[in-house]
Image (cartoon, rainbow, N blue to C red; front, side, top):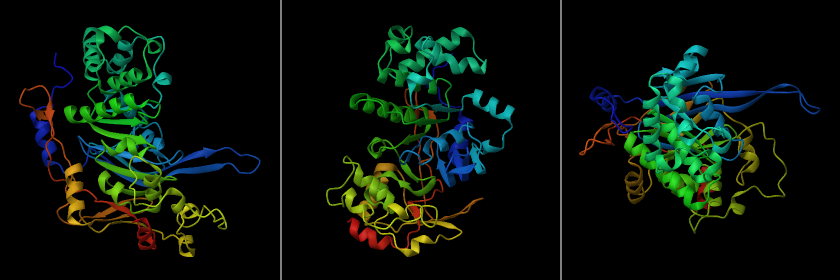
Length: 416
C-alpha cells in the first residue's frame, strides 16, 4: 500500500501544468437564509453573500478574511454543498457543484476530494471514539479500503501532523489538549488525500504556540501534498505568514482581493485599511490608527441598506456613496514602485498586472491584461521519491483588485 504522500500519476501532473483553469472557481455566488417573522420584522430572506467570486489553484493557500457575520463560513459551507446558493457557480475541477443532484452531491462528498475542517474540534469529534477511529472515519464512508488499510492510513495521517499513532491513536478527544485535537481534525481532513481543504478558523481557540504549529502544518501540507487550502479567519495576522492571496469580505460582499503582501502593505479599500490598522502584528507604524479610520461618532446616521455597503462606517463617506451602480466593478490597482512589486513576487510567487473584472448578479466577466501569472502546482516526485514538489507555471489570474471607490485617492492620501 502506498503512503499518504504518494504523488498523483504522471498523466495528472501533465494536465495540471497545461491547464490554466483554477482547481476551485467560484463566480457570482449569492446565498440567502430564511428569516422568521418577529415583532419588528416580517418573514423573508436575509442575503448573506452577494455576487462573490473566488479562485484557488492547486498548492495555493487563499485566506478569506472578515469580521463575524461577513459570510466567510457560509462561503465555505456553500463550496462543500452544505448550503445551496441562489445564484452563481461553484466549479471544482471544472464541475459545477452547485448543479449536482442530492445523490450526486452525496457521492461527491464521500469521494473525499474536498474536505471541510470545522472550527471547533471538541464539538465536531465524537467523544466516545478513539483518535484513530476519528481520523479513519472519512475512509469508512468511501467503502474502498479494508479495515486494516483504513487503520494504516489513519496512522500515516496522524504521523504527518506530528502525533505519534502509538501514543495518541487509542486516546479519546477528552484525553488530549486543544492543540492536539486540532491536529487530529487536520489529520482527519487529509486522510482521504483531498485536492482541496477548507479550514474554518483553524487557530481561533488556540494559544500562541499551538496556533503557530497548526499554521505551519497547513503550510507544510500544501507543499508536500499539493493541497489547495482556503483558510477562513477574522485575524489578518494568522494569514500573513502562510497565505498566497487574501480575499476580504464585508457584509457578504467581496471588497478586495490580491496577493497577501500587497493587500497588507497597500490596502485599496477603506475596510481593508481598517482591518490592517486594527491588527498590531501587521500594522505599519506610519499608518493611521483605527480611530482615525472609523466614522466620527457625532456624524448623522446613514442608511445601511443603500449605496456603498461600508459607507455607514467609513470616515470618508460622502453623498455620492448613497448611490451604487448596477454593476460592481473590480478594477486592478496600479503597480507600486518596483521594489514593492518585487517583494510581492518573492513572497507570493504572483506577478501582478492590470486586470479589470466586472461582476454582476449572474456572472463574472474577466478582461485580463497580458503577463499575469500565479502559482499552478503539479505534483511530481521529489528527488527521494516520497513527496511532491511545487512547480510554478503561468496561469491567468486577476491581480490585486478592489471595489471601485470614487474617493479612493482621498482616503489613501490620509493612509500613508
